[in-house]
Length: 119
Image 1 (tube, rainbow, N blue to C red):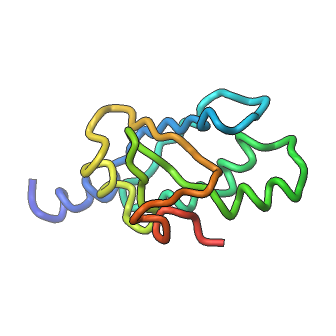
Image 2: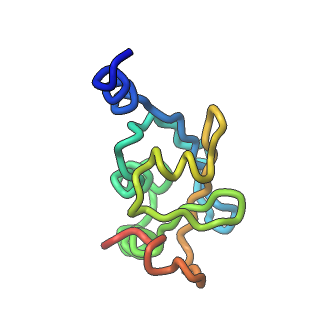
């Protein structure tokens, strides 16, 4: 394999992500959101899909509130949305299916500015 083929292989790789809703949120739909994401993508691009998957039947004002406070966690660690998905998976995941938890309440941490989704 030459370097161009290796670069193409890495560029085309995908990561299986399973996102569950945190226990603090009441939602009628509790099935996880499962996606096959490109390594070169960003988790922030899932914002609208996650809102529609978990909160498709809630009031508009509550949806806006959740949208401003969303953040992801992996084994107790807040996950940054401004790093590529592949990098985050290499740092934190490493398994075949990367399991994350979606929170919609305010977080207080050293990463609070970078873990919340941009509005």
